[in-house]
Image 1 (tube, one colour):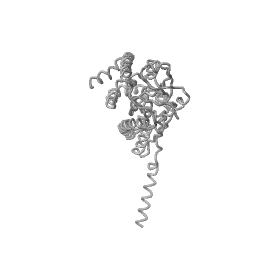
Image 2 (cartoon, one colour; image 1 turned 135 degrees about the vertical axis):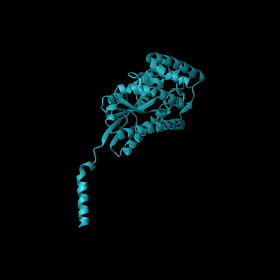
Image 3 (spheres, rainbow, N blue to C red; image 1 turned 30 degrees about the vertical axis):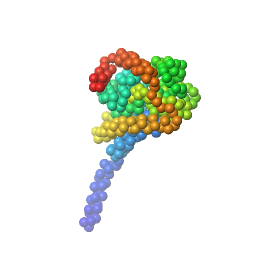
Image 4 (cartoon, rainbow, N blue to C red; image 1 turned 135 degrees about the horizontal axis):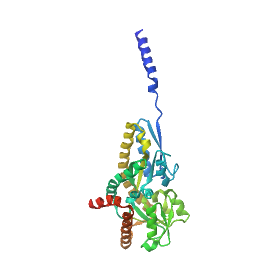
Length: 328
């Protein structure tokens, strides 16, 4: 009798709490990126998303949509801002028309190492946060691409070798560089590099060793010059309303996972740089430094580029560059 009574009471307790025990529908986010699933950036984002699901016990799920499948790369920031998707990733230099300070890390020959790139980001981050907040966005983390080098179908000895050629560009900064070298800018997204090379639409480009490997450029291009021109960063961000709608524990899970993703991503970038350069060599490409005289002319071009950028951006540029150079 006592056993039956206990069982009955236990059943009553379970029934009385049944609505509370029913699993609440998880919050579902989509995170748009323009890069391939195989990219180390996308792999890092997937690890970030998996960590959020794990820590929140599935109450927040983030589905990564790579390869421009949800929105094209240059449209992702606006799509997140407009609430068309909850989160996204883009290259920071794609935002310079509306947020000029985002172009700081793409000024040639200012940043020449990963340590320099990190110092730049520490100074740049508060300004990006401010601009994002006014647009209803929240930055989560940023990770650099490996240093940018020059790819060319033909050997390069001087700036004159670019005159009349078609150079791949993907933002305002690379377009300006092509113009300064006397090349014709050709807007080609990263996922379209292989096709553009095969169709003869481009002769050269300034991008990382990783991009070259991901696009298997050695079929159509044979020369890669290590110039460490700059370290452009990809930034991952969310719609601010979507973020504030989360429970506090879920918000913490997102920001904690973002901090880990940033640390992991910078390490992945450095590893990818070394591995990709070795792969280009293994595939028969010539990998070397450019002649010293040409390198000096590129640095002078970088100085011109820097002055133009500071004049166009104003005081915010000084808020980055003055402490950056003082700390060196």
